[in-house]
Image 1 (cartoon, rainbow, N blue to C red):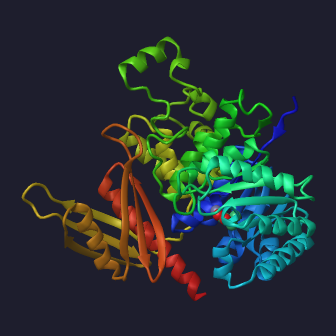
Image 2: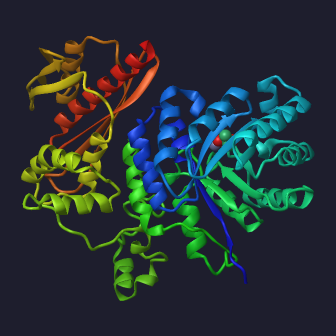
Length: 509
Ligand code: KIV
Ligand code: ZN
């Protein structure tokens, strides 16, 4: 039997980022794109270039530097969007433009355009995209709530105009697996010019069915799946790449005529990198990549597992990159061992960057901890990868508290050449610290979210704090790591303030 390829299209950097409430820097995006290339995704949707100069720059950088996958840019069915997308992916080895327009009654109402005008815009935009690029994907947005005959008419016209990939988005996660599978089959049967075209699906998870719908579509002839790492994406997210890929691989008996080209051993690394960059915590029970996905806790399970892992495990942990063998990093480890481990985790630093990281991050932490774990390195690299210039620098922090005492914090912050100091009381040491920082910087910033997680286990574990700060309509994610959670909180707040300062500067320029 001939095995057909299912192309994996990753949209973590576009649909995923849309949901994060904050933009990543170009270097952070590049780091993720490089990991996606190591994961061997076929297509990386790198972003939506018309949305901001920063986004354009990030897509351009990825197109220039990432080899292997097709690099795709998103564009509405509007001339300026398409020109900007084409410009951003111009230097990619294999560029793609993905253009879309809403075709459901709800979306056509929103666009205030009748069906024939929408169809005209779809055709024009595909033709325009084809004038720049041979690889053009077209999406009739909200396809699953679009009237079927009209959907077919739009798809046929888009193919006639030169689209090479047709994507069927379940934009609001409305589809149901059997129905969605039947829709895919009907599209393939009804559209006269669909031969030679790759039919793709893009499923959202509003009803928790994104992966099920994607797999039903594959079962019925879809040969491109649009997914995100950890299932991040608008609202409840998109189909999780690791789940779709591992379902097809694990159930080879069922999906016997298809395969993806994904290097599954890179899955866990990709998951951690993305979670960290977006400041999102992967739930422990998340399929494939959750901390408990391969943990056996009940006595019966442990017993059965020890006798034969297959009793309670359908996937080998090493197949998704949970490899047990690793170099143990301690204060006695040298730069070479550090570099080797960082490269295994997907971070490639120049000699100068490695030296700086070793001296300022690795050694101070390894002095405090018995062992530096992968998660520690990932958390510290999250800080390093941000191309944020420092307007505010935390020079000194002291907190006091305890039962019966009023929590107090004193901070010193360097703002360019000046060092300012304030002390404040609060509901707890973290609150007092944030108030003291606010008293120094005196900005109308509000704290929208605060999250803390232990990066590794044990009492000397690194704590990672993420804060969402808002100012003048801008929301940024600040991140800080330290073995001291109050220091991690202060660092996260200052990191957020530095990002807001970059935003303000960019909007003035
Ligand atoms: O969900 C959606 O419809 C999208 C399109 C841009 C494909 O993200
Ligand atoms: Zn989407």
